[in-house]
Image (cartoon, rainbow, N blue to C red; front, top):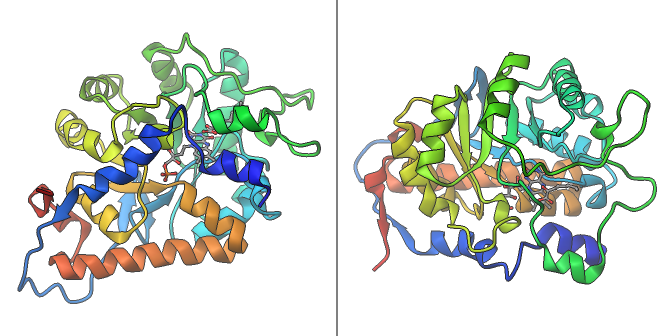
Length: 330
Ligand SMILES: Cc1cc2nc3c(=O)[nH]c(=O)nc-3n(C[C@H](O)[C@H](O)[C@H](O)COP(=O)(O)O)c2cc1C
Ligand SMILES: CCCCCCC(=O)C(=O)O
């Protein structure tokens, strides 16, 4: 891949402490397995917001898939569908959501609410009409993170011929995605009022924000630090998860992303209370290497790895993964 695009996909903000921290935090955790539990064949099926999935591993929203592979987001969606899971389509996708929906699998749509409410409402309706089954509102980006690799590379824009296709307005002009520093909880309430889709907020790390999310009628939260691309120095997501889960108290599902690479990482996240996990960069790597088949194989391999380690840890279903199965390494 072009090394500039490679840096865009792989990189994080600042000194990339949080990017590394997401991975290192899993290294500090150990599994305390149960034995003689006759787990037989495991059952990883997971239902989220009325959609049945083959696995609790979903595809995180990531931008610009046409930079990774000529199949773009459509190829990613085909891979996710073949693996029986959902893909969250980024608002910064390089193909139209209607075309991505043609892949046939379940899609959710990720939104950066724009200051132009009429445009935002039209985009939400467009995603809904394309068949997206949930709206994921990214709330960790009041301003854009300082990605030093991109600054060094002078990577500020998509190359000619590519665009954020879902940012076209009714004149056919592609608008820039604006990060909105004035965004507040009132806009979440507004979104709840304009869509019948379940609304999740992505980018929660503080338990008090998780309580506010529940109080504002949100349907799910995603514990995320944007893969270390926004606030460098932010807490690792697997470290933030237990307090968020406790604050939510089972009222809505809590999902988590960031640094999930192996079945053991998924197991630990589920044991700490996540209903499901999302994977970002590994899916982009798989797309770049192998298109739709690469994405399918990556998701299937990660799911098979989860199945294997669940057998070793004595769990038949995700619901049997409980916090007592996780210890902090000495
Ligand atoms: C190249 C790239 C682009 C991303 N684009 C978006 C995006 O458009 N919207 C969003 O909410 N998050 C975006 N993210 C963050 C991911 O949704 C997710 O939080 C993160 O990648 C998870 O960490 P992981 O890459 O370690 O799995 C992006 C991440 C990467 C690596
Ligand atoms: C101004 C373009 C916005 C793209 C945002 C993609 C993203 O969230 C990322 O982490 O990169």
